[in-house]
Amino acid sequence: MSDGLTVPFALAAGLSGRLESSSLIVVAGLAEIVAGAIAMGLGGYLAASSDTEHYVTERAREEREVRDIPSAEAAELTTVLASYGLSAEESAPIVTALRKRPEAWVDFMMRFELGIERPNPRRAVLSALTIAGAYVAGGVIPLAPYMAIGRARIALVLSVIVTAVALTTLGYVNGHFTGTPPLRSALYTALIGGLAAAAAFLVARAIV
Amino acid sequence: MSDGLTVPFALAAGLSGRLESSSLIVVAGLAEIVAGAIAMGLGGYLAASSDTEHYVTERAREEREVRDIPSAEAAELTTVLASYGLSAEESAPIVTALRKRPEAWVDFMMRFELGIERPNPRRAVLSALTIAGAYVAGGVIPLAPYMAIGRARIALVLSVIVTAVALTTLGYVNGHFTGTPPLRSALYTALIGGLAAAAAFLVARAIV
Image (cartoon, rainbow over all chains, first blue to last red; front, side):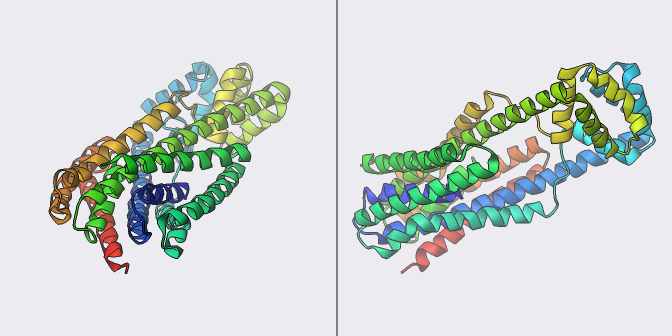
């Protein structure tokens, strides 16, 4: 969502450095929002699908190894535990215990040897819709002033204000949920938006 | 990089539905590339920094628990191992062994209880530079035809060709490295670019 706020905001700000009227800025902004939402939403879908596929493939391999070459797999488990400082004698009981439970053994190897977690199969679709929806919702905020006001320079001022408020709020809420200090998160998120917009504005003005 | 290819490509294609001359398309495209590179590069930097911070905080908490309340932490370890079907008797030897090695014990809990890996501290900067660089490198490809050719519709045709080639190649190489079948990855990547551009084109034409 912060990309959805930042990039259309910066693009519109950049074009305000070149255009008198808002109409073409709205066209460019909406085209960007639609393109960004599709590219990032489908990109997120593909990434999540590929995670699921990777998990399924690796799990099938581990299951095969546990079934067909349990001794080699037990040796692998001993090696993994040795990396935590356990001697072969110390890890023997856990190796024996897991050999009795092939399913749990596979779970253990997935987590320990490969460090990958079972992805939620519905995550791919959910991830795509969330990303695309957030991008659109974010993008509409900085563009709204250009839709309402015909003169680009005046719309820009209003766009700066609403986007700054939105980015700060978003950064604050985001910090609250991720454990980053909320005020710092709010400041950084707004700063990124400001930097991106300033750079876009300068680039748009610099081009002959 | 595929976002960097797709979004500026789609934006330029969308504006080609409205503008005769390439010059303003180049302005909008470059403003988008700069804004996207900054937003995504700095966004990647913040995400990676926040991962590192999260790891450090959680690790400090585990270290405190291992030092101050080892019995409670040992009980936690037994619970975690029980989720893999190990009885308290079966997990006793590994608990005893890890209690002798606090550092390894913390490593074990980080991996097992929390499932988080130690992030590379230099990853944040590297991640930011890679994302921003890839976005710029990707974005220049679909825009190059508009820089060279003044008439937008002709530039669009060339942009479709070079972007299709670039997205297909990128998807193929990406599939090769991630384990997704390369041809399928190539097809999907190109398809996303095509969909995004078609949507942007339609939106730009539909706006009065």
